[in-house]
Length: 216
Ligand code: URA
Image 1 (cartoon, rainbow, N blue to C red):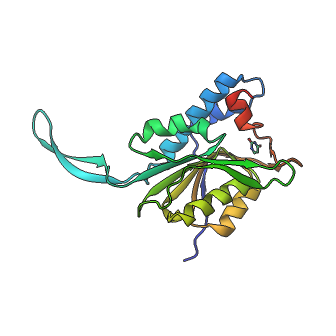
Image 2 (image 1 turned 45 degrees about the vertical axis):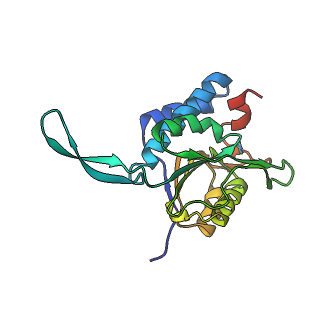
C-alpha cells in the first residue's frame, strides 16, 4: 500500500469563524491573537480525535462500578510550536493537552532566499520512543520551515507516523513538498489557499501571522 499525505480541513463553524476574523486586515492584534488561540483549540480538538492514546479502566461511581475510558498518561505527548507564529496556537492546544510537554523551535526565514535558519532549539537530544508529536505551524507557505522542523524531529528519533501538524493556512507548494518527503504525515488546517506571491506570502492568506499576533 502506498502512503499518501492526509490533509484535513475540518468543516467546523467555529474554525471557519475564527479564520474569517484572522484573515480580516481590520482585526486588531489582540483579537487576532484570540482568533489564533481559538483556531489552535478547535484544530487540536479535531486532530486528537483518533490520535490521543486512551486506556480502559473501571471506576466506582457513587452507585456502582463502571467501565470508563481515560487518557493514557503513560504515552508521552510533545507539542512543538514553531516560533514565532506557532506560539499563537499554543494556548489553545495546551488547554486540551494538559499533560503534554512543550518544546520550542525557533525558525526564521531569510526574506531574500526564503530559506529558514534556526535561532532557538529546545528539542530534547532524543525523544522517548513512541512519543506522539503535535507540531504548531500556522502558515505552511513555501514549506521551508516545516521541512526543517521535520528533519530536526527525525534526527531526534521521532516517528513521523505518530506526528500531526496543526496549521491555519496551507499553500499547495508546502503540501506538495511534505507529500513528496513525508507521506506518512497528517495535517489539520483551517484552509488551503491558492498560492504564494513573489515574497513567499500566502494569498489571500492572513499576512504575517507573527507580526499580527505580537503587534510588531
Ligand atoms: N508566514 C506568514 O506569517 N505568512 C505568510 O503568508 C507566509 C509565511
